[in-house]
Length: 351
Image 1 (cartoon, rainbow, N blue to C red):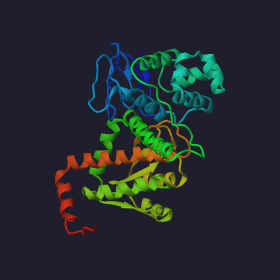
Image 2: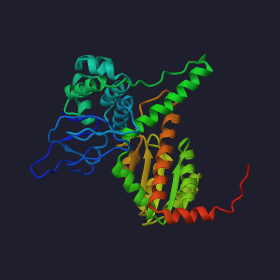
Image 3: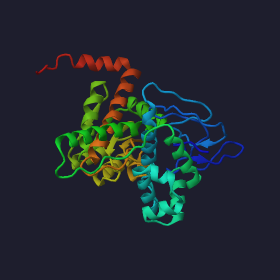
Image 4: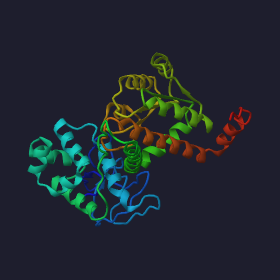
């Protein structure tokens, strides 16, 4: 049985495997997510993609003082969501149903899931395989295991026009909580570490995002400067495009886009990559155009949310990723961090 979040890959005697869903060669081995999850799996030789092995390890129990048992399914669903960005339309409908109602999927037949999702039964099987399982039966087994140990996650309901202030506040709080829970199962430690090292060695960093993502990019500029990383932020698209084309090897672009498909962000990311700069994407899903273009993709996951809360949930998770990057950079280069602190001593303290 493959575990929750690690895609199953067949290994030969030498341990090699085929490319993963993102088109990048992987290897047999184990890894961790940003937050490890406690779980016990039967020992069985599997070949796990290094890019996908981020919550569970085989044949041993992993404990974590930060995440409690109630978070496990939310983390798993976050991982599934982060890897559903490049599915066929019929497969996407099945995965959307899984994210919205895992209890139904876990208790239903292939035909029942197909009928509710509005697809053919073979599409249900293909969807299960697309997100890393050997088939629908294996997916159901993993849902059953989760059901025995934790609550089921369901996205917040759409707020009605007559919703009370209390209901709006509660929905906003739950949106943030669920987004951060999903983040723990989506961000890959190997990619996170690579992003830290890439930014540490950068000559300069350009951060860009459009719409709601622009606030995350602006936060990245401020936070990275505060730890001594030369960082620029250019909200204007045309100016940012010129700056991106003037970058080169040794420079880094942090591109923020929840959908991974924002046209202006993609254009700037492509221009920077063409100029030789390294591209770090902070986005919701792997397999999207931005994540595919990026040298390093930090996907935050998160289940589909009602329109009123969609941007809020992903923005919070993206801000946490930026905070974590900054904290890691400060820890790994304390001398530069101290120089940045001294540089800010004479700044006015306005109350």
